[in-house]
Amino acid sequence: MNNKIFLSIVILIGLSVNLFSQGHDKEIFEDEYIKNQLVKVTNWQFQHPKHDPRDWTNAAFYAGAFAAWQTTHDQSIYDALINIGNSVDWQPYKRWYHADDIAVCQTYIDLYRIEKKPEMLQRTLDTIQLYISRPYPTSGEIDVIKYWWCDALFMAPPSLVKLGITTGDQRFLEANDAYYKECYDLLFDKEEHLFARDLNYVLKPDGSGLKEANGQKIFWSRGNGWVMGGLARVLQELPHNYKNRPFYENLFREMASRIASLQQSDGLWRASLIDPASYPGGEVSGSGFFCYAFAWGINNGLLDPKIYLPVVRKAWIGLNECVNEEGRVGWVQPIGADPRKNFDADSWEVYGTGAFLLAGSEVVKLKNRK
Image: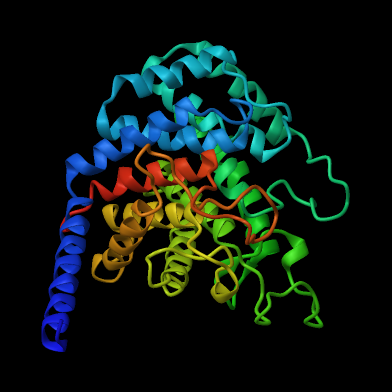
């Protein structure tokens, strides 16, 4: 084979791959594709249960599954969520004082709003009333406030705000405002516009403390993803004239600008946001929550589509590359308090599934998304 023929074949193959890629990229923004993907991913996760049904991990999955049901109207998803609630008697998890253990209440409240059955709400009401009336049983170390780790900003705030809106009791909204501001003051880095996971990752006044290999501060994708996802869910609930809404809106926009700048070429974010070179592959749970939050922000007029729609498009393409034929979402960082390197395409966790489902539920609403 001479060089001209070889070169022609290479060019033809390249053009074919590029055209296939462009066609595939367009397909994944079609309504039918997104809805089918949401159903497939949700069904796979229901068929592969993990952890206690009331655990925070599953709470993130249920949030995504509920959004998938709202998007697809697939009755089997709704029935599965109702069956899970009935199976645990609509109880939060074990600890009344811990944000993780009231995260599942978000979905209980969402389902109660439809079913209007008091037993679906009563245990959530009892537990969260206890939560806001008693101090956190601190060990005196890093757990010095109720929302002492940034992931808590997804777990508890939507539950408190949803409960306040549903019952008309302002105490729940006001308590959340106070706890949220404490976390912001403790963990938000005003130079980097990101949240440290907890006090272990906040540098001391002399500059000493934990850092990444490149010398940067440690801000992990999943933790800040939880924050952005939680902000979207809180803002979805708060009335536009609510007195403290501007605080949440300003924080949402400030973080969105910084996080968008850290997106990698494959559309995803790395486990460590500002040391991407040290971590292999995209981290899907953080990336899913970012995609969800940015798409929600565009859909609700908080983010400029000219700036953020390209970010969402790249993210949605990248996220779909991490879903296998069965509907399993891979490349999910395992449970832990810091960025991890030991995960790959076969690593899955239920919260990664939830993040993907939330993202798809907002991407499908975007105008001019193709």
